Each structure stands twice: as structure tokens, then as C-alpha cells.
Length: 232
Image 1 (cartoon, rainbow, N blue to C red):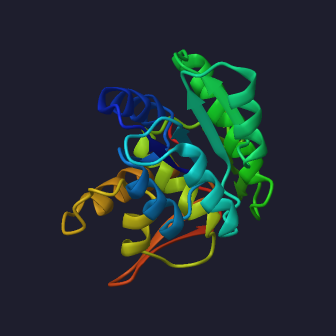
Image 2: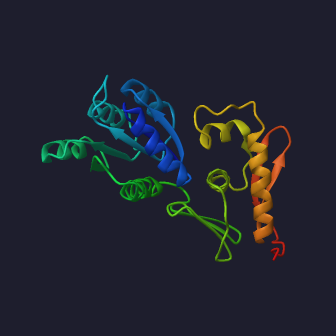
């Protein structure tokens, strides 16, 4: 899942991004309203965390423009303003949630899970993805094989999630650049292949009846297969 975080305070921006990275979300960041507007209109996000008090534009303006353009992306507004008028105005403008700063990391994680759950309602796989005996809960970020946990790094989990969203279809490297990695990722590196190789080994070791196949020169495909015995 990919989240856009918008705040003109770079320290807060980095903190929220780190919390979300630890939860295996792909994160884009914007420190100005205009940058946020451009990213939100060009890219597909599973959720947006939007500060109201930006230096160049008000968060309400950005939110209203997204809704006018038909963007249903779930939006969490967060602000130092705790007055009822601001909260009501934000929700009436099309926000899905409103939280008052400061917010604990635990509450932020819970708010984001709730936020993306709303977006998952329109997804073709919803909150849970299944391929063979492999299951991914997109909200708890838990992967299991025959009910047993599969230990993955946050990047491996993001890769697996996107491949499961496209089960049986070839996913190009450029798509993985766009959907899984953050904006500043260097597409000329071989880091995708390295992560895919490690993910493939972990799936094999878990006995998953799903395997990643390389389509040479094109990309990768996740397909159901006959499970191999798990290593002990």
C-alpha cells in the first residue's frame, strides 16, 4: 500500500514516514501544498495524510480540489486545531478522518489502518489476499502460509502485496518502481532483483503454493503452484 504524507515541517514529515515505513507502507512525501496537489492528482494512493496548515496552500483547498476531480482516495486531516468548527469543516470538505496534533505513533498506525480499510472496500481483493495456501492481511500486514507466519522484511512484504494484487499477470520493473518504491528510488539499480530473489527463497522455504517467475526482459509474475515441502 502507498501513502502520501503532506507536512511543511520536515521533522514531522520524516517521523511519520519512518513510522509508516516500519509498517511496510510505501511512502511519498510532500512539504508544500502545490507538490501535494500534483502528486495526489497524478498518482494512485491508498491513503493521504494531509496537514491543514501548509505554507503555500491550505489543506482544505487541496482536499476540495481532489474531491472535485473525482479522487476518492481516503484522506486523514491532521492539525493543531482542536476546535469543533475546524473538525466539522474538514469532514464536510470530504475528509475521512481528522486527528489533532500531537498524535502518538500507536494512534497514528491505528488511524492509517482505518483509513486504508475504507479504500480497500473498493479494491478487488479487499482487506485480504490469497494465492494458494499463502495469505496476506493488507491491514495487519501479516503474511501466513497454512496459518503459520512468514517472516518478511517491510520491502519484501510490499513487493509480495503488489504481486498478489496482480496474481497471474506480468508486473514490469517500471511498475514496481512506481508502486512499491518511494519516489527517489534509482531505477538503474538491481535492488528489485535482489529483493525478489530473497522473497522467492522465503516463499519456497515456507512451503507456499505460490511462486514468483521471472519474465526475462519484462518483469515478474506470481502464480499458484504445487507446494514444496517446507524446510525444517
